[in-house]
Image (cartoon, rainbow, N blue to C red; front, side, top):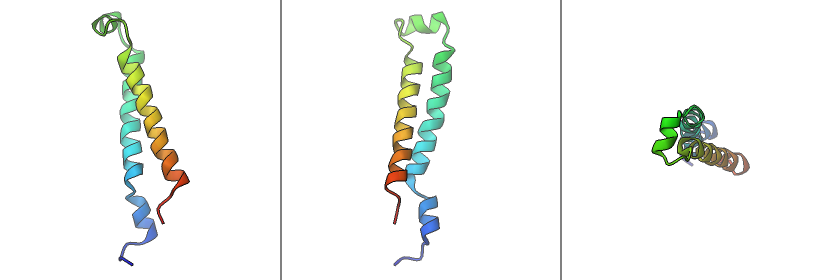
Length: 74
């Protein structure tokens, strides 16, 4: 067995880091998309792309968090 304890391995679980980073960017994009001006929507041909990508990123972050919860490191 290596010198790393279970607590330190769980602390550096990449799924946690990935879910946090994607989640933070998802929140930012969702807010930006929610506050898009008509000019911003016109540039994207009427589609609130920031809003949809932000929501998708929040879903991906939730999936990483869920994966970490159902299959923790041993």
